[in-house]
Length: 177
Length: 398
Image 1 (spheres, chains in turn purple, orange):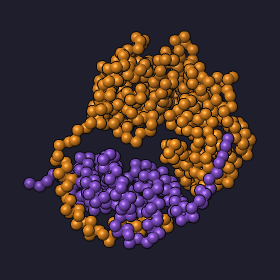
Image 2: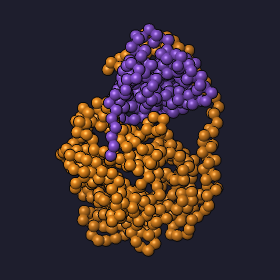
Image 3: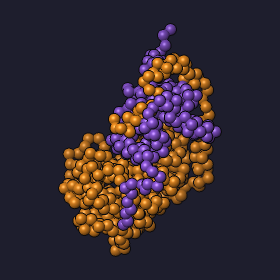
Image 4: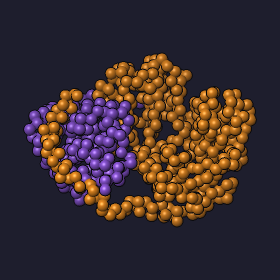
C-alpha cells in the first residue's frame, strides 16, 4: 500500500531540506547535539506539518534554532556545551580559514545571540534578509536594520580587538537634559 | 556582501565543499525523526505547572467583589475550545512583558451583552501577575489591561462608512474601582448608555462592554464622538475620544502641572509636562511651541513608549520608560551613540543637527539592563521619510 499523501509530501520535504538543516545544526553545536537537534527538528516538523509554509527552509531553521536553544537550557549540558564551544570555535574546517576570518569568528562570540544568529544566517546559511527575518520571527524591515547594526557591532569588535590595549571606546558621548 | 560578512563566510565550518559529506550523513539519519514521533510524548510539566498555578489563583482568591449590575462568575464561565487555548498559549511566546504570564489553560468565554442584547464573545484569561489578557474573536491580540479606569477601542465592523469619522463599534473594559457606568456622546447631542458586564475574581472587578453604534448614528454629523466613564455620583472620571484626543490630555489637572524636563531646540524650548489625574495617576505630555503630543496617563509603565515632535528644523524624542532604568542609549546610522540621562522615568532629547540627515539618523533606542544586555530596543526603519522618520519634515505630524 502506498503511504498517504502527507507522508509523501513530507519525504519530499526531507529530501530537499535535510542537508541544509543538518548543516545549520552542525554549525551551531557539537556533532552529537547537532544530530539530536536535527532529528528533533524534523520530528517537530512532522507533528506540525500542516503549519509548514510554502518556503519551508526558513521555518525549519527557526524550529532548529529553538530546539538548539532548548538543548542549551538543559543545566547539566550547558556547562559542557559552553566549554566545548569555547574549545572548538571556530570548528575544525575553519582552521583553514585565514587569520582575519578567525578574528571575526572570535569577535562574533562577544555579540548578543540575536545579532550573532542573524549574521550567521546571512553569512553561513546564505539567506537573504527577508528569509532570515522569517527564521527570527521579525519583519523584513526590522531585520535589515538589525543586520545593519549587527554588522557594525561586529566590525567595531574586530577593530577593538586589533587596537592596542587601553584604546578608549570610540564615539561615546554623554548627554544630559 | 560586506567585508566582515565575507570574512565570516570564509570561516563557515561546513562550506559547500563538505556538501557530499553532509548528504551522506543525512541518509544515515533518515529514520531518526521517525523514531521520535513514535515515542511516547514527554510529560508536559510546564503546562501542568501553569494549570496548577491557575487553579491555585482561582482557589485562593475570593469569589465575587460586589453584586452590582450584571455580574458574571468567571470560574463558572464556559471554558474555551482548544483552538483558543492554543492562541493564548502562543501569546506567551515572545510576548511583550505586559502580555507574558498569561494562564492560557484558564481562558474562559465571557459573553458580553451589547446594546441590542446580542452576546459578544470576549475570550479572557487571567495572568500570573494579577492582570489578565483578552482576545476579542480568536485571532486578535493579547492586551494587558491595566489598573486604569477605562480602556476602549473604537472600530468599524462590516462595511466602512463613507465618512471616515464614523465608527460603528466601541468596546473595551472599565475598572470597578473608579467606574460605575458609561455614556456615549454623539455629534448631534444625543447620548446612550452602553451595558457593562462585570466579571469577578480572578479578573478582579473589571467590566467589559461592546457598544454597537445604531444605524441612525452611522452618518457624518450624527456619529459617536466621545465615551465617558462615570463614577457612582455621575462625575466624569475619564473620557475616550473617537478622533484625536486633545493635548494636554483632558484627564490631567492642568492647574497642578509641573515641568519634568526641558530641552533646547532650533525652534525654542521643548518642555515635558506632568500633571496628576482625578484617579491617582498622572498624565505627561511634551510641548514645543504650538505643537504638543501626549506621552500618556499611565505613569509607571512596564514597557517604554516614545513619541516624536518633528518640525522643519528639529526632532525631539520624548517618552516614558520603566522606572528601573536611569539612562537610555540612542544609536545613530553613522555608528555613533549617545547615552541620555532620564528624569524620573522620562526621556526628552533634542537630536543634534549633525544627526538630522539620513546617513546619520537615529536608528535605535535601547534600554540596557545592569549587566549591559539590552532590555528593550526600539528599532527605527531606515529609508523612510516624512512623519515616519526621525528627520526634519515639512509635514504636519501627529
